[in-house]
Image 1 (cartoon, rainbow, N blue to C red):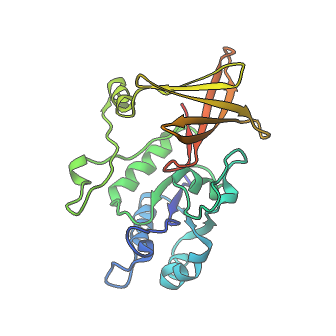
Image 2: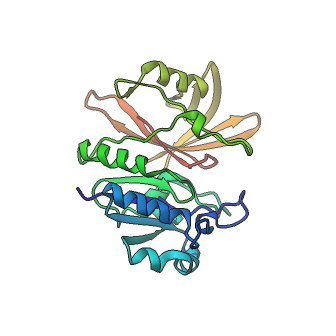
Image 3: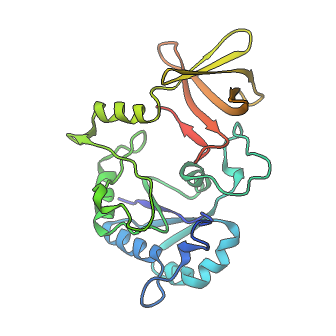
Length: 264
């Protein structure tokens, strides 16, 4: 089976103070990404798409690009706001790239078939790529996904705090209790209501925000809520289900960590 590994290397590493994705860590000047590609190749991945900022390409190729290109099938894609959906409005003056979903969208023209996504500046270990490749072999061509998880005690750091998502599984599936706990951690199920007069409400965890909405030219719904005197702006995409129910499928929050959230 042919499988692609998408490597996200477009982050600005502002907290680190430099381009840590091309920091040399190996005895021969290797960067972490070279270990990633080596381990992934051994597991069965045969194509690699590296997501970069355009201005990073020259430095990247100087450090290791030519060495990598001689050992693997490598394509480059550049993360830019041009890859974002038309309905998503980038705040004026923002230059920092968004997170995982927009990065993958930037590579849509060179990503083919089944693929996995990793960070350029993390070390995953050979076993992770073997597990992922074997899981991809079992998945249908479209419509399903999976992830490789680690024991929490093996991922926390002695040097500062980190954010980790916690999941529990039963028979290979996330349990309903875990999903309920995840919802509770974020205040419960998020509900939007709209009235015919242009009013909107967002209800979560017993709290309510009031605001207004309007239909935008691209077919999405623009929503503005008042939050303690500050404006919260969202764009929402809806579709009709087979049961003639209106379902929200995506929401953008211009101040969010990744900017775009897909709803299941």
